[in-house]
Image (cartoon, rainbow, N blue to C red; front, side, top):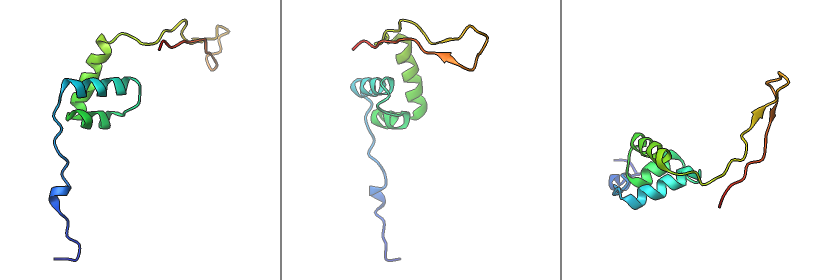
Length: 92
């Protein structure tokens, strides 16, 4: 063997148990964009595909926590290259 020996038991991450609390935390973090999908999936002990499906369900049934007075609209002068951004407020 060589000089560098690698302990294979340290290379494998511990399995995380999927709990409703972990899933709730991950979905809220994804919704607020404080966690990315691979990190959220790891946090829950799910695959990325399972996390995507769970998050889509969360989006379907989760009420918006922001309020949009008006959506951005295209200028009506026929010019589609410039956009008018109108005021959007966020509820906290």
